[in-house]
Amino acid sequence: MGGSGSGRGAVKGIGMGIGIGRSGGNRTVLITGVSKGIGRALAIELANRGHTIIGCSRTQEKLDSLQSLLTTNSNHHLFLNTDVSCNNSVAEMARIVMEKKGGPPDIIVNSAGTINKNNKMWERNGL
Image 1 (cartoon, rainbow, N blue to C red):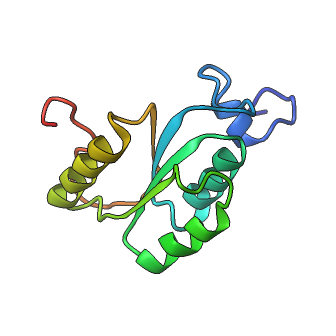
Image 2 (image 1 turned 90 degrees about the vertical axis):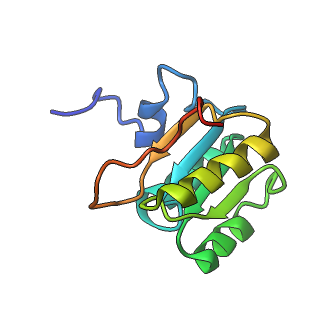
Image 3 (image 1 turned 90 degrees about the horizontal axis):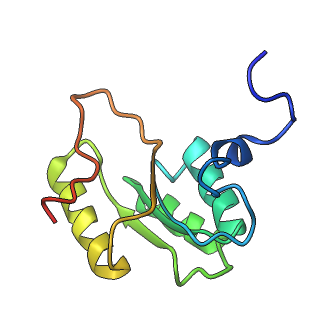
């Protein structure tokens, strides 16, 4: 059987080693593919636990919808229209994150689906 057998949710299990699963969080988490599916569910759960979300998606309307759901500390969250299959788009996202958040996120969750070559999600040297 998979998992720890404790019946814990996926978010809690993921964060056991880094403290992301606890409530009252203070981590900054960048989630790609945040507009639907696992990315969206993770963003909502982590925001509810007090973490700051940086989310990206290609669909602005879905980003706006998610932003409106996260009413608690919504000023701290950042949602960007980004195509992770385009290096220039990712570089612009990284520039904006560094400018608005003062540094790279604590955690990056690559939830966006891509079927092309490996993309550079974060390079600190180039920023």
